[in-house]
Amino acid sequence: MEGQREGRALAGRTLITGGAGFIGSRLAARLLAERQPVILLDNFSDYYDPARKRANIADLRSEFPDRPPLVVEADVRDRAALSQLFVAEEIRRVAHLAGMAAVRYSVERAPLYAEVNTLGSVNVLECARQHEVENFILASTSSVYGNAAPPFREDQIPDRPLAPYPASKRAAELMAHTTHVLFGLNVTIARLFNVYGPAGRPDMMPLKVLDWLHEGRVIPMYDGGALRRDWTYIDDTVEALFRALQQPLGYEILNLGFGATRSFAEFVAIYEELTGIVARKEHLPAPPSEPDTLWSDPTKARRLLGWQPKTDLRTGLQATWDWYRGAVLSR
Image 1 (cartoon, one colour):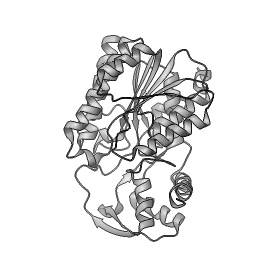
Image 2: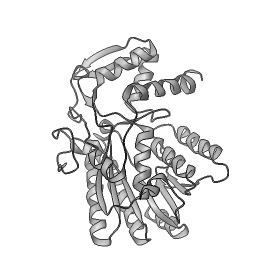
Image 3: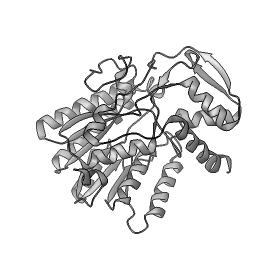
Image 4: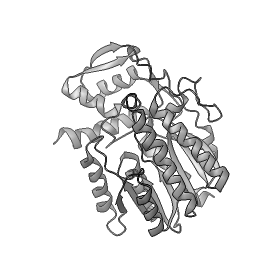
C-alpha cells in the first residue's frame, strides 16, 4: 500500500476534468512526474481569463516534453463529448475537478451551478461507471458544512448549505454515493478547504488581497475580519488528491484541510507584513452566504491516505507573494 501512495506506473490514463485550472494542472504535474499518463478536459471558461489556463497547459508541455498531457477542450455538460472521450481512451481513474466555484458568485446563478456542478458531475459519473473506471475522485467543498459546529468531521450531515455553490456540490456528492451503491464505482469525495498558492485563481481571496494592496483599493473586512478559514496550501492539497487516486476506498468522504483556522484579519496582517503595505479597510457585515468558520478535522485523511499537510499559512503566503512579485508585478 505504501508503494501505491508514493506513485507507480498504472495501467490506463487518469482523466482530470477542469485539468487546465489551478488545482487540476498541478495535480497533472504530480502524476506526470510519476510517469502516469493524463488527459486534461477543460472548457476554458471565461469566468476568469482563459489565457491563465492555457499558460498552465503550456507549462506542463514545457516541463514534460517527452510525455505531454492529452488536452481535450469540452464541457462536462456535453454528455456526447464525454462519452466519445471515454470510448476513445483507456481511462481508468478520474479526478473530477471541473465546476463552477465561488460562493458569492453563485448566489444569483443557481441554475448555472446546478447545471455544471450537479448535472455535469452526473454526466462524468455515468461515463465512469459505464467504462470500468477503477477509481473516481469528486472534488467537493468545505462550504457544504454551512454553519455546522466546527471543526468539521465527515460524519456530520451537511444538510444546511448557505448558497447554490455548496448546495450543488452536496447534490453531486449524493449522486456519487448512489452510483457507488448501484454500480460499485469507487468514489472518494474530497472536501477541499480554501486552497491557495502561487498561480492561484485570480478570483480567490489570496490573490485578490494582493491586487487590492498593490492597487491601493479598499479591502472589505466582513464582521471586522473575524471570519475564520482553514487555509490549505496547493502542494498539500495536490498530494492528498494524488494519494487518493492511487487508492480505491469504496465510498469515502475526506476533509482535505490543514486542520487549523486563521481569521481574515490575521490573513491580511500577514500580507501587510510581507508586502510592507498598510491595507485600506472597510468593515462590513458578512453576507448570509458566508459561514462564520470553515475548519477541518483531517484525521480521517491522515488515517486512510497517510497524508499530513505541511505548509503553514505564513509560509504559503510568502510563496504566493514571491510568485506574485515575479509573475504579476514584473509584467
